[in-house]
Length: 289
Image 1 (cartoon, helix red, strand yellow):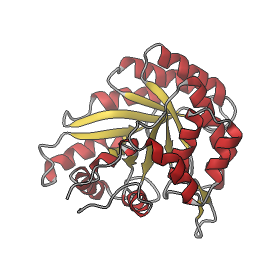
Image 2 (cartoon, one colour):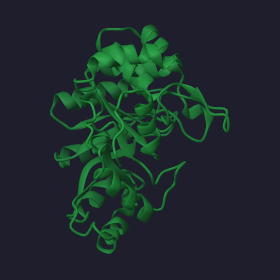
Image 3 (tube, helix red, strand yellow):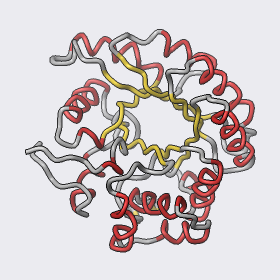
């Protein structure tokens, strides 16, 4: 049995298995990703995300792993090296690794993001085959950075925004108002964006182990749709606070056969967690794995 993933969910979940809190080993992550790519839900899954420093190890694993030696693997590179070395990492990548995107933080919280953004923009301009995502802190300098990104995109540079929606500390979880503000700011600038961390489940929920309240990815789907239809920050924030999935489903269902507006997707250390929630909510029909 084959089940088609609805168009509005295509490529929603990048495979970030090697990153916390899952922290899978690279061999285990590669084996699982090959399984995802061969599955009935493959259209849901984006590239395998790996640190830039791990690209040589990943290439060696392609030689050693059964069934992958002839595979051209789509990967996304996460910058764990200085920005000026990210281009070198991409250029040195094994030809069996199709580097689709590069993502890197341009500043720490409280720092001016513009100098780092200028470096990453230069990388994007020099590698027109890449989609480049600048992770910008939700802090001072954010709107100026979004203005710069929008200007570069209008000039033809393939660079967009990325925001953190969770992590290992409370301050890494933006409030609904903060996240709504950046969603609307990107909408106003016609600026695509990615999200990372914390989006483990479909709806907003409290993690009993950490005490952190997580955003839900279906909340974000509904919020982005609302923003695209002209909703303001207050209304978008209200969508992000909902814990009942029923009104969220009512908002997203009409767009099942459309491309997601602006939101490129998110990285998750588990593909199965969001997939399970999507099946439970009826947004994806279960298939044979």
